[in-house]
Image (tube, rainbow, N blue to C red; front, side):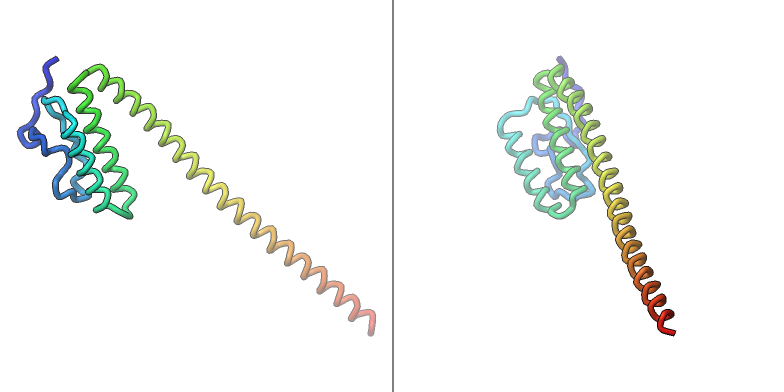
Length: 147
């Protein structure tokens, strides 16, 4: 199959990820007409590791770096075998959707846990207040009996 035309700005083998790796420039995923080789994959891996080091502590930036690297790997596979690349892309979409659903469930469970913790804290405070009230009533009764 003929590969799609590649813009000259991303046609070089060094264009997998930006060399300076600023966090805000990590959204572009290159596509290439030339099949990738082992050196290309090692270069991508090296740049990914460098970018992850720059983005240390920034979870959102690190996720974007992994997405970018994954997109580049899909593009590399697709150049070798279009159908395999398409199938991997579809698998990624399904698995990413499942991942998003799991993250939403985790957020919901954390929210429910926080609410349950607050209810338990309030129940404990109510129990303590009821105990203090009962003790005060008993003291008042005893004090009233002595008159």
